[in-house]
Image (cartoon, rainbow, N blue to C red):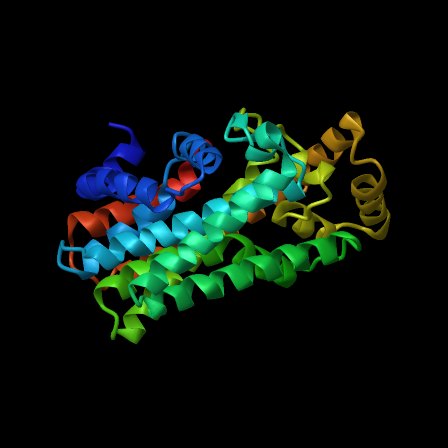
Length: 326
């Protein structure tokens, strides 16, 4: 059994039921929209977000979850899917997880409207059931994600990102959503337990930080992971290995690195030289050590809870985040 199947085992029934509920939450009166949402549902990824939600909910709920847990997972997926559809338009991207993106098949105007539809469905799903607490969690996440994207754009123009700003960007852009999944899982079964909800929000944030640093490391790897090596450099994204090496470099090396990323990011040979330099100067080892720190902090938060299949799966999930090959 592979790791993802192992993680899913204690929530297999819930994940199957969730797929039906999520599909139902997208239904509309417009045939074109139903065709597009059917395409989206059938090209789902590993579904890590609902897995986090259900595992946290079952662990805190004594092995039981409720309709709010399903709604919370659906709201997260609707809003996350909406943001991906919009991202592909913004990035002018034609592929998503190896398949054609919505904008590639149906053009930008339709993709933007589909994203808007999914956002509104997520909001309405929570309002229809008075799940204001869940809506507050996900709305906060959407605000953070938008701010993170804009902060990255602002800083990319100047290439002067410090390590602290980098952590701010990835916390807002990536970790916030995983944090929201875990907070919603806790809130769905223990709405009054504010301390516990905050604890699992932090747990998800730490796991999300480790997840993003792992993604950054893929840019320097040799495996085929759906994106070619050096793509972050081509897009002038300042990731942790590069930031660390910049801070350790002599003024001459720093000038060469910044010039390479700013003015020669389309030159394959130059990009490979940057990758080799970052590796040589210990950028990957440094990023890996930071990733492991976040992972260990996340697991430390779990350590106070009694053993259960759900705790085991959450443990496996955090380890999978840093060990994955894709």
